[in-house]
Length: 407
Image (cartoon, rainbow, N blue to C red; front, side, top):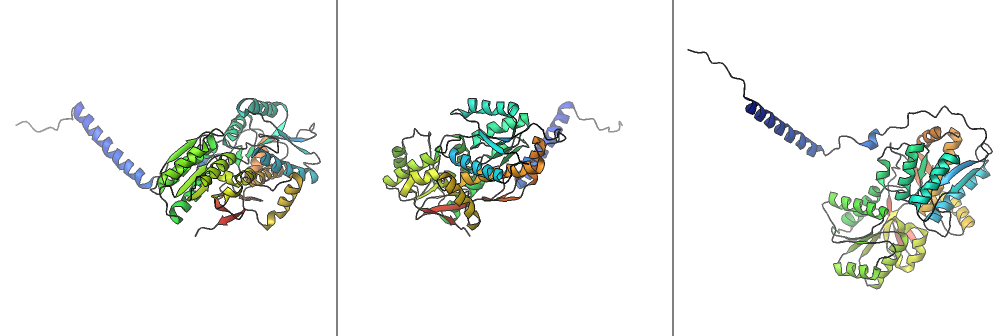
């Protein structure tokens, strides 16, 4: 009798066994991933700083002024750019009154054009390489900050943005970029929390502009709604400065929405709010951060009453001197844009005084200054250079802004 000898599995059988094993492993690992829902790598936890050369370079001896580039307009009548410019100017004027940097004055120079993507960015790049800039204050919004970020990645110049809320600008892991405003997700979660948890509305209508910053905040609002198993009744989109606001207002009224969220620039938001009032809309109105700008205050006039928005700056008694000096110097009250530019400029001044005229060391000093207290509150960078500050909500009441306290 021939003894039984187990045969090796055929090629097809081995393939089948391997395939079954892979399928089982896939479902096991997928189930675990779905269970935890944690990304395998978070840049914000692991971003590294700059480890290259440059710190050993001594201060230059032929410098008679400390030049800082401003990536925004220097026209006070241009909003919100004029507010950013004014806030930064005031900070550097104060620094020069205190002796500048070792007796050398700080000089803020605007590099701007009507098309910042070409002429503006080109002028700023030439200044970085040929005119001896030590830092860039800017940009004044998400797109211009992305442009400055690309320049920083090549030239290794520190960039402190007073106007950027776009979280994606910090996901390129450029260690010289810092933003002092709270991020879009922070604002979106505060807005959605109020709408769902306190107003009980799970189907608001959203009207948003098609510019970059408005779209980024609109995306985060949709995400925040989805996380709470809620959604939009309608999403209406409009182009900047060319929208038919009466028609959009009628569509919002016809939608039957109890809450409408309007995301756009200060002028577009003001015009749409006015049209909503004229159309008889009696529901709640939530706006983006532009409702806190000085231009919205004047354009919306009485139509702003009752409007809720992310409160990016809540001045208190400790800010009285800043407000008084700003008003005396420029003839209007500072808004959050001016206050954040003021803080961004002061951070640059402190970093240069601590590090000297050396771009690599200035970048180090900016990171080491965190946490830092300014007129806008605490600035605390995460590892990518984004400010981790939380965001409250405000409401226009009786012509003034009142903070909304949520339990």
